Length: 356
Ligand SMILES: [Zn+2]
Image 1: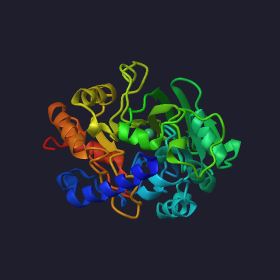
Image 2: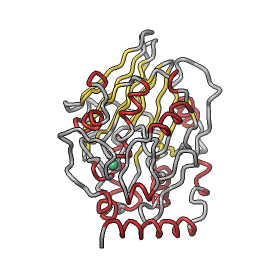
Image 3: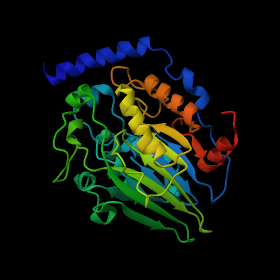
Image 4: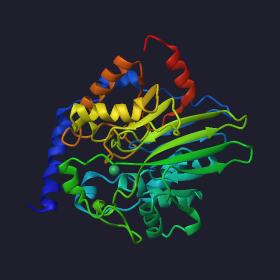
């Protein structure tokens, strides 16, 4: 069967599944963090979520964006034709969060699949931010004619990239190379699973499978405030793991993990247990915020929703996470798109409440 025909059949199946599944978030609304947009403090650490593992971290007049992905082509485009960054949609999204005033220092691609890296060079072009990631991500930047001065390639194990702000505050980004989750065979078949790295500039439009994984990172983000205090979080973009990687003693402990759960609901419970042990337990996280749980073929003008059960089982992921939370005392919270949260205010208040 041709890939095109297969894709067309799949889109029909998705439509039927969506009609049958009702509101898949109704059981989890109680877990969503609420907006703290009214909080104004230059030492506050804000986070805004845009679906998949797109997270904007802002403190003072300085920001870091992970896996900025706004174009989100629909199923038909994604599965049946070629994709490219959509500059109009990207600009609308950047304007909606007033990115021009947020001092975007870096757009970090935690790996190079389309839903993590495709839009990054256009975001960098519009904002002046640096594109930071693997050599494969760098070739995605070059394919979009991003200037070399805006491209920073991670070459070393456990490499740290630092951005200093004029007031003495800073960001430290620590890149730990890890493994991507093994894609379900259905998705791997559609994506094409071509070469795992790029060695030449990638010029879109291309089929989604032309964006290879490249190096895949666990990303520690430390905010150093101007009074010298530090707070560190971990962003895990893909639900892959390497045993004993994040428990190495020189790596920081964190309060919060943004835990990529794409594909986790389709994995056996032994795998889920290993992922929890190696990413949540190993880092000492007290609060887990699942990311990459949404259907990334829906535009960001619509509310986030989990993907079709054909692709993932968000319900199983959440059942597993809530069981772990109940047995360990770790808290689980979700974020909606565009909601700006004062992260550590939330952490401190959640952890001081014993009943939740
Ligand atoms: Zn991926």
